[in-house]
Each structure stands twice: as C-alpha cells, then as structure tokens.
Length: 293
Image (cartoon, rainbow, N blue to C red):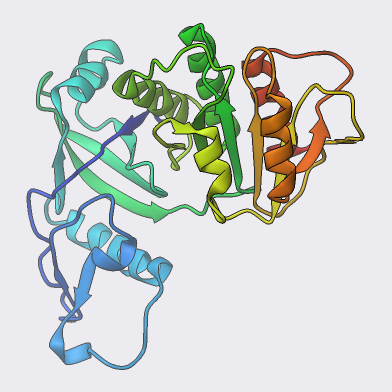
C-alpha cells in the first residue's frame, strides 16, 4: 500500500517530448487542473472531436510510459514538509513509489528519483482522475464551545467522505473561534489517512439566519434539520440524492430557528432515541447520509 501525500499547487519541472507519432505536445501541468489540461493536441491532429478527461489521461500515461524507457519525463519537487515525511519518517529511498493528490480528484503515482530530505524529487508514472463515489452530503453544523470537539467532527466527516461542512453561528452558539489553517490541516490529514482524493470543502462560519435566507445555500435535493423539540419527526434515512442537514449547538436550535428552517422547506428529523452532543449528532448524520444505517 503506497503512502499518500497532498500537494496544493504543482508545476512540472520538465516537458514531455513529442511522441514518435507527433500526436501530442506537452504543456505545464498544475495538479489542480483536470486531465484534459495535461496535454494539448498538435496542429496536425486538431479536429472537431472532443476528448474526455479519461481519454486524455490514458494518452498521457501511455506517452509517459513510453518516454520513461529513455529518461524520466516529468519530475515533481516536493516541499520540505512532504520531503521530510517521505525520507526521514517513512525512510523512503530512490525507486520507491508514492501517491500524490491535489484533493480535487487526481491521483498521481510517482517514483522517487532524488531522495533529498528537504527537496525530494519524484517522476510521474501515472495520473488517474478519480470520481467521488457515494452520495453528496453537506453538513451545516453549529460551532462547539470546546474547539477540540468540532475538530473531532471534521476529522470523522472527512474520513466518511462528506463533501462540505458549513460552520454555523446560531443564537445559542457560545464561541466563534475558527482557526482556518489548523482545521484545513486536519482535513488534509484525514483525507490522506483514509486514502481519498477529494478534500472536504469547509466554508467560513456563517450566521444561521443568513444561511437560511439564502434560497439555494448549496445544491441539495433533500434538506433536513435535526432538533430535540418533541414534534412530529421522521428518522433520518439514507438517500442517493444530494442532501443538506442542519445540526444545532449545545442547547439545540431555538424554536424560532427551527420554524425558520421549516418555512424554507427543511424536513424535521431525529437521529435516535438519545440526546447527542453536537459533534456526535453531526457524525451520526454524516454516516447515515453517506453510507446508510
């Protein structure tokens, strides 16, 4: 099992030489671009047909394999953090393979060609676009007074493959602390640990009433609100359709907030017979909506 590394922005150090058939010429590659931008057709072969990302990636991979018999075609220099982790922590050597991802669905398999502990260099073997499987789930959850509990929820949501988390500031929210860089690092670590290629997207904290007032806050066929007031509620169930669920703070949503959500078409749901902490409720809801009971 190959180790995973995250790279936000990436430029290739060298170009791919034109193939013997003269079909493709090389362009610089940024990992956060789709496979179609990896290579561009030469003037001789430009036509009206449109190639898919997968077709372009296959062409690219075939060209890379062919050129690798002559020399390393495309090289990537890792940053110091990734280099130290690969060389000093994992004790990887020249020839060892690793996976790189940009968190946007691209998986690169690469081999170490320079095992420098600060500037490790790898050559690209394969670039593979990955589709995000499972249901698209967004969890809008109130910030918790204890920030470590919110961090725990984010980690678990990322491991479950939740698409997006929106921190909410509600009437009963007791803190607005939000360390974006720290939380981003937690999300990256969880993505790599669970060997995924899609990074959970996290929004900046937003006021509950402002969020509810937005007619289309996020694309979602199913919209739910989980609350503790004794009213008619259905058990939350799995749906393959994109879904959005609201999770309240310690002390729950206020009756006014619940009413506002219901007026905007949110369905009231329960997560079980016991009362759950905010972070636990978020994790349970994410589990149900992503993979079912």
